[in-house]
Length: 348
Image (cartoon, rainbow, N blue to C red; front, top):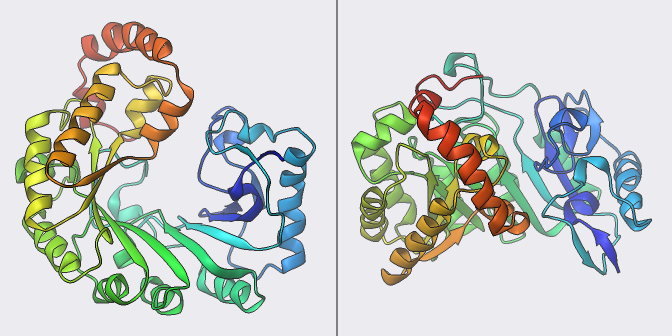
């Protein structure tokens, strides 16, 4: 038994110019804010089993020797347990493309929409090779990140290869602006989940957040995806954005949309740039809001998950620290300066 992480032992994450262990980076000042880097300057070439696990062991052995890679210090994913050290991959994140048909105000992509790229390399050849070598086994989770997967040029090929049976779970975040027949088929015949980031309950707020007028089309596509799907295969996500959708009335409208589409599961998250600005210490106001949102959802028969940044922050920040940050940062800096400017000219 020792402290380690499944993503260090059995994970791969594809960035635009490298392969890393995961997409979590708790230390912005170490390694330029990157997670453990397995293959820098990656451009789509085939990697052998020996090459792959030799690199993985360089990091995993540090944990086994009661140490920790600097890039991983303080990460909420680290656990103390008996680890399976077999040479296999069961968790892959694809986030090496940035093309999108929306321009969300909270997006971390600093490029304008017309500058975003579909990808700099093809990922399917390596994934197929790893499967042929027995490295990708049953129980594989394939998580999609980056841009909008429905318009990504390898979307259909990846789903046909991995998403049409029950051997691989695929998790696809989507804005649902475009309806994809192959994604819909995989939801209903395979083991695919989609998470639609709706983030609002009204067309007016949608246009503020997404900076595109597609609210009605998205609602229509949510109904299409969920019609006849297994429960919980289609989820709606609500990212709380300070000053824009951080109110219960907007959330109640969101819940009405979920109920009308017969959605069973929703996810709540906190906008990432806000979280960085407060040093990952969530304002207690938003903690209370999250709890209230959870209760409202449960009262309507919906399950509700506090997701990603919510989960990460709550696991390592004490209530006392959140109060201190709220006083020092929110009251004195964020609100007095006016929150609006952080979201009207957000690119950095």
